[in-house]
Amino acid sequence: MELTASMIDSPKIDFDSINRGFSAKALVYDDYGADHPVILWARAQVRAQLMALVPPGSRVLELAAGTGADAVFLAEHGYRVHATDLADGMVAETRRKIETRGLADRLTAQQVSFTELERVTGGPYDLIFSNFGGLNCVPDLTVMTRGLPRVLKPGGFVTLVVMPHVCPWELAQALRGDFKTAFRRLHPGGVMARVASAHFMTYYFRPGQVLSALGPGYRRVALRGLSVFSPPSYLENFSRRYPNLFRRLTDLDERLGSWPLLNAMGDFFMLTVQAREP
Image 1 (tube, rainbow, N blue to C red):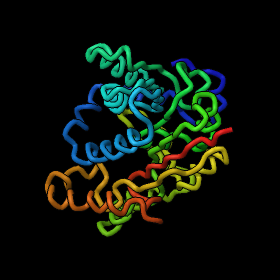
Image 2 (tube, rainbow, N blue to C red):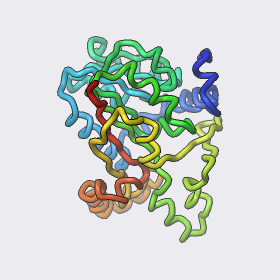
Image 3 (cartoon, one colour):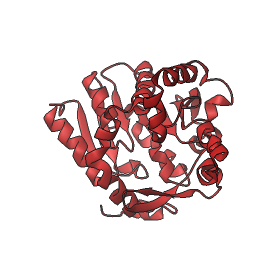
Image 4 (cartoon, one colour):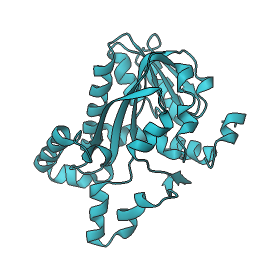
């Protein structure tokens, strides 16, 4: 993918490594999540939130869409969706799904970074969302939020699923002597992540940091933690080995994840805001 001026200006973001890493995972990404209890549960929570915000027929923009799993789901439920991603391999998978599932009238795909919303086509949109921590690849969320007014309708909604600093299950790894995993999110300068053979920095955010990056033009609608009580996706053996306990823990997440303090932690938090009318 050719680097453009606005991408070069974005601070400390290794776009090439992000592209290579996630493109390398594109062909196996869907298989990994197809029967993964944690991923299936988390996707259901996010999708329910999105569908509660705007009705079918609404125009939806997905940022860091990956292979388009959520975009396809929404398109098949009557939404008009534009899926964007930096990784050419991920975009290719989304386009393959558009063709094989006959969704060309409801789903489009574009290879573009969320740092370049001025290049996104098809707007303005009723709803913009990003799932599963795609935004955690940047140290400063204003590289995304500054472009939102160009693509979001007045009164439109934004739902962002972001990895926070505090994940109880990760902190608990200190009891097993795994201090690197336990405290990695607390590192103030981010941590180096590996996807396939590519390495790039990952950063963690508090909900207040996201709201600050959005600025006063938005009002908070909802905030909840995901996988606060239940394990994160990479601890999939737990959810498969103890399915009954896993269901009880996800039930706690669903009932208590919106409580103060709990809504700012977990493997992810899901923040929804609405753009204020002019």
